[in-house]
Image (spheres, helix red, strand yellow):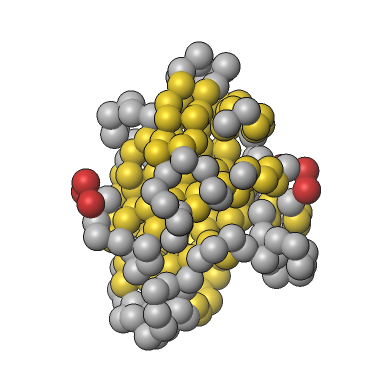
Length: 231
């Protein structure tokens, strides 16, 4: 079963410096039918104006993933990390027992476009941690493993039984992803068009996947997306 979450049904907040779309309930946007999916709690598509950003603020007991689509994002945190993320980079913040961080557009003029993702951890009380890795130069496979519970295939280790893949399909390409028993998936289309088991996606659309033996993916014009394999 695949249930589409249309892009235009998401929550939307435009603060001038920040233009954000919320797939699930977040901040002032509340939809009791869309509080998250499995251990996935937040998917925000954010565009931040040049020189602007999120000032230092705390988090606790979340796995926070950021994926930069275009532009560059400057990170600083209470553990002493300072880094600039560029297009194709994935960042993981394990908030654990507590961490404070800031995220700012590194460019004074050009916008930065990224996805902000929150996952519940396996348990509360993990020590806080930080990791960052570029997948911009990854082989052009349909799916590239970016995050996993064991750090498989040079992916970033996260404290949850979730595999996060960066998906890229060329025009007219197709790919089948086998689903393990009692597993679920979420697909978030960033750009292009996608067909998953007969369901059509357009930019910004997402979907939950349950009780499917495989996900058969095709694209007419090409697609850039994330696929979450969830417990």
